[in-house]
Length: 296
Image 1 (cartoon, rainbow, N blue to C red):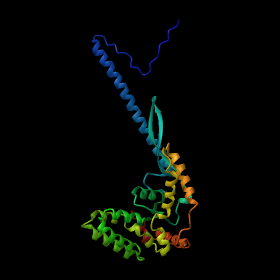
Image 2: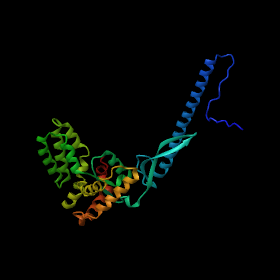
Image 3: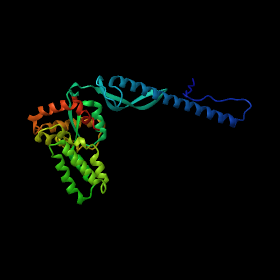
């Protein structure tokens, strides 16, 4: 009856060095095995870095350098995705840079008004996608909330009124002066509130700087127009106890937004939107306004 021997892969062959004690020969065998494992790990690490460099070069060719706006790019970066690859018999996990095709509808030719909260990451994303065509309006509701969080209760009332009065001004320079004066007033006793107010201060007055009519200005001064839709998404998804993957999250979010769409109404002041388009065109093309548009 034939005898079958089990083949063991990647096993270091025994070391036979005449003249050396058995204990020394065993130690050398262990050292050679460790060296082989170390070289393999090193080769895998180098291979991963080379692979990452190739993938990044491919995305850069299609979507342009990271963090820099490129009007001629064919796609835009879209974060990273989990991936895996086998190198020298080892399965390795890695983050694959992702991108999505460029959507001409989002080019914002002639300027586009983007209302956002105080997220720095979101501000950078807006700049990366829309570049100089983006005119940012920082949400006044979020800004007011952030400032008041740095104040004791006895100071929140009068500071809140000062903010409301400044944002209600029709003259951009006067409103900016009032907010700057308020920040100076808060500096000594409440430096945190002053710092929060100064961060992105000019962008809280974008709708005023554009000279929009009062009704449209009130509609676009905050992110409230989209918050109701997000609330509907929270209602739709609140009973989901386990999220299996990112695609499931996207499907449920889309379902919630479709449900919220049924209750959408016309924007207050929608008849004045042509005035907004005209103001955005001037803000993004006139040289004297370029510095205001580029505020970070």
